[in-house]
Image 1 (tube, rainbow, N blue to C red):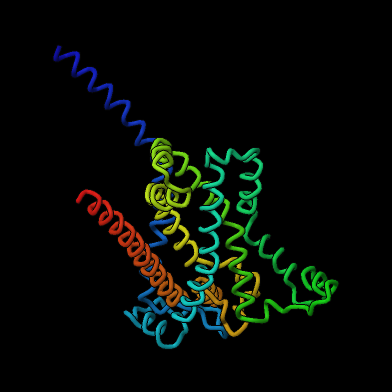
Image 2 (cartoon, rainbow, N blue to C red):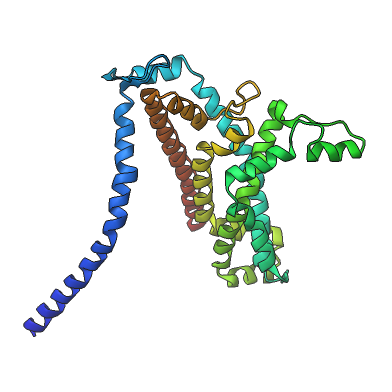
Length: 316
């Protein structure tokens, strides 16, 4: 018996090693392409390392401590760019989560029994498959400031004055928010649908028997039960929004116009990388890493605390 147990145990170990072998490519790629650049970025954020415009040789790397961070917060508008980024993300995320919740509830509601939902699901997910750069070029053409642009041509035919959306702060924010909404609400809808389809329908039937309205069922049963997925959607959208780059970069030709109102933190990081100022670029990267981590922890703690407190009140 002891010999048989030892033989089975050796077989288990021999099989388990294949799991580690299959993990080697992922771990190697993670170390080379993510972990090493992360440490390198953090390392160079404490060094003076740039290429002057009048020279072909680099200055540094020379250790300067926290000087890059001091420069970041004294001689730049990093907080203004962060505010621009957050505003454009919020303008796109609020309609995104509302429309996604509405569509997910419609598509998973057995009482509505909507037909051909597969076609609608495919249509709303299609913008997510389009490259952001191509989508940005399309929106740039549609909202062109030229009087011969598609939107202005339609407005002129209807008797309205042409608009200059990309010449105003509100118009530029609106176009960026519209693009972010259109690109991501399909993906958010699919995630929320998956969460709602996993709910125990007997709870909803019991609430209907007790006379609860559809609004009460949605806010008192559906939303609390899919809160983990909502937290995931909020955190991932927040991280993606803070890293916003390609859409405003193309719409404003990398200038963040008008008056730097559409300049995001990652666009500012790209300007420093283009000018070969790797020290300040590293400081900006570390700053964004800290901001994303802090915001994500705040969101997770806030929603988790509310869930825990509500569960405690129910038990009491």
